[in-house]
Image (tube, rainbow over all chains, first blue to last red; front, side, top):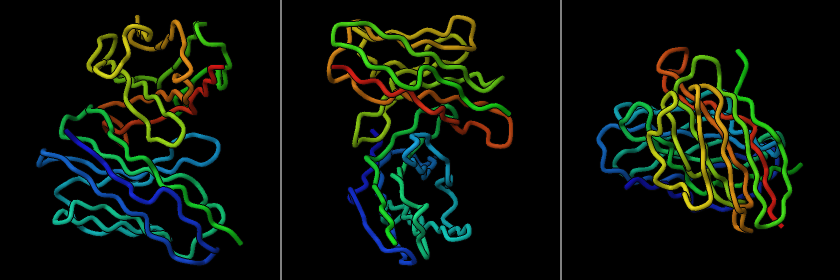
Length: 115
Length: 116
């Protein structure tokens, strides 16, 4: 069965610091998809990125970057120069190869960015 | 395009009462999901519909929870009778094999249920 582990429950940083959120996953499928979602206080899940298991290229989008390493089953997320608006709970999730399969979420990491 | 709609946004009930949540997916999305998110945890799938048929309800507590999607569009999730441990946010999501993000799940704002 698939599993996603986010060992960091809560992280606090000061604005402009860089921060990395860790995600480790388990799956027996060779084809799978990894995701990061942001959940601000309003509660809605905001899609950030999707990665498929065949694409290990790191990705950068503005201040966000993602490091996918199949060898360690990790998909870490880094925010560079954090801002107060980045404060939220961040979830890593896994979807196995079925095209309409369910998402399995980690327990989330709460990020608090202060001035 | 309009997003996934859910109502109500908030609900407070006493234990042993019943409650129903409504979800209207994005137009044309055949697949609909209900997730339960308990405070401090990630969302957990309760039930998945493909049109009006159930694909996966393995984690739905069927003694008290029920869900339907009669015409393959809107869906209702019901809890009867509610327990204290049902306090959670109930998220609805939908997906489609076509569009800019095929098979990706779009989430609604959720319904926050408090059982006292």
